Image 1 (cartoon, rainbow, N blue to C red):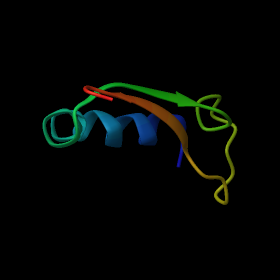
Image 2 (cartoon, helix red, strand yellow):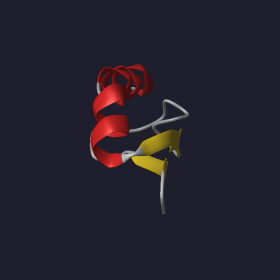
Image 3 (cartoon, one colour):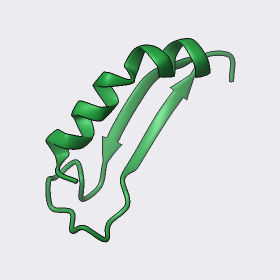
Image 4 (spheres, one colour):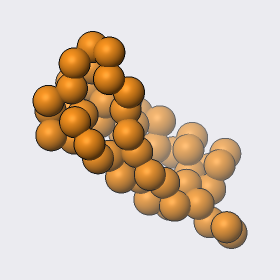
Length: 52
């Protein structure tokens, strides 16, 4: 997936992630964030969850 594709999916699920899991912040990093990922790369992300 390209950086833009990943961001589109994350944005589409933003409300669900917040309501269901308490996600308050989500950061994309690594090769996907730089838009240099190959098809075999995994998406690296970090999230902050309310109450943890």
